[in-house]
Image (cartoon, rainbow, N blue to C red):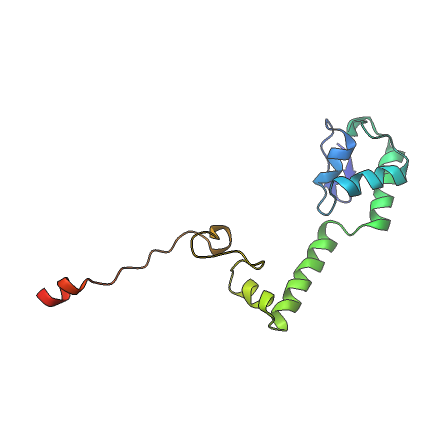
Length: 129
């Protein structure tokens, strides 16, 4: 199982798809990395030699921010938005959608499971009591 940028990539898949398991590498960047490392598109990850894996690793290290470094950068950007108290930072702080989505009915992913609030008593119930 080849290990690139600290991630075990799946050996049975083609290398351009296996590289996508690394956080920060998508379809286009994977193809660019393979082109720069001079590796054929379509070869399986298990068929790569150690030298080819090392070339891919060095290209990724030189050209991309991936995994822990990218995650730290994203978290610091979010912390900066929270510190300057901009609208997006306030939405992050309140655990609400940041990009303008409606929240009346949806947004369960950001808000979490429903928290049922007890309804008010009706007017008729108050008159009897």
